[in-house]
Length: 110
Image (cartoon, rainbow, N blue to C red; front, side):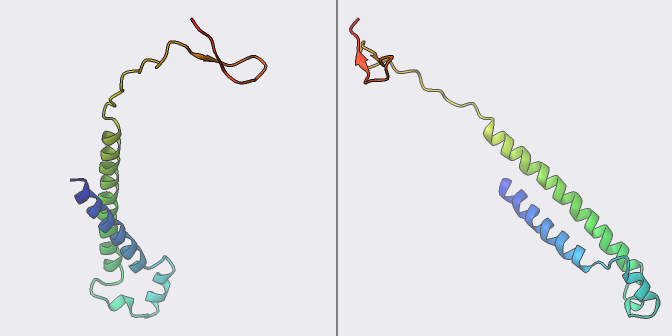
């Protein structure tokens, strides 16, 4: 399931990049008014912009939903309870103690 969400996420990101690059900036409307060829397109001057912005809006919504889904998968993977091993006993009953002068550790018998 997570792999499917990743594939949709990447495809949505690539689609957003492509659609944003296809759209005209605000300054392109002035060129269309003087006959640069955009006015004679399939959708008309504003129809193409509306179709591209609607498609971009849909892909952005899909991108945010898949981002939320991937976040859910990441959080649920790390919230599994961890098995804590029991503490081991010391191998000997004598614990090393360091001297106050910073010398070598000495073993003190019980």
